[in-house]
Length: 464
Image (cartoon, rainbow, N blue to C red; front, side):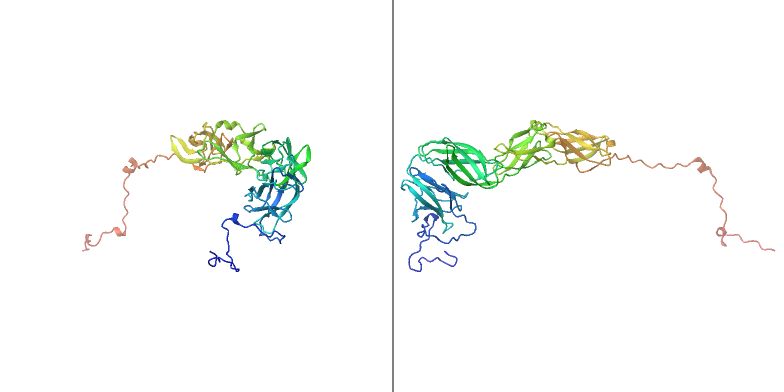
């Protein structure tokens, strides 16, 4: 079904149309003449990386080719001016990492010099060419990389796998391997060859990559020490080293301290001890995704590092180390649950950092701003303090001197200092004195209003 309705079943010429259901059913191109290159943005055309230009391969072994291309694309190999298709015994698809490899029988080709071509269906019209001599010699001993098994993208300071064969049944002893970048050579040491029934091979895992290899594209070269002309080279992408970031945290009630951060996978974490030496922490690992997370719970670890001045670095497999970094330590302030007055004391209860050894000292801020030791903590960090109120101001704070990190936590929220309440007493009742009761009452002075009224007064006698 198309966007505008059912798809046509026949073409304009009346012939039936065939729509492949599977990418494997896509027909091979019949016209392999040079075309104008038209590639959608971001597509990687198929390219050869091995065998190298101008080398030779023995027809007595499988002919192996490898390179890079668009992930998921289907590749095709051909040779000669007529682009004769080559049947692939294995391979044919570009891997998710952008590499491809393919093998085909060499005995079907007579000795001689041939042009080999690779194309892919994701970049129609583009082809890459290698000119290679096919030799009729079972002991040609030509070195060749296996691009699908050899690491082709690695970080400086990381590890990689080296895998390939000698195109011969005879071993060549130890082979030299180098990374060549920006005109400099970085040795990866030697890898031994081992004889098998089909071919002498070399395979070595976890090979350290020098941390100072510049980021970018490099050439991975394998060569025979006795015969420098016998070598093979493939491109390898070198990614920059990942810096390490760490922090130490804790929670009130926790018995341990937790280290979290990130670093380069394959590296190890080292801490500096109090005497200045560096020691690898066997319990702290950098995971494959670069994350770091480890909880220190065993009290014996308190003596391992210089916790008061905690610094660390990452140590790479090649024996070198990254820069020293300071590990920030973040501790919580104590939680105060209650402050009460009891038996002439200020009683403070709360929780702070725990400690399996129940070590650590709770301190209280005095009225003059100094700190004094007030008590210990339990394994889960709880504490109960009985304080002399005369040492406290109107408010006070609490902190912990942590025995793990050898430093003080932040101070708690300021607490109001309780004071005893005075017992209320009744006001005294004034008593009458003897002097007050024996004093004569004052004599009243008559006024005009005090004169008797006409109704109540006695009439005055008339003069007679």
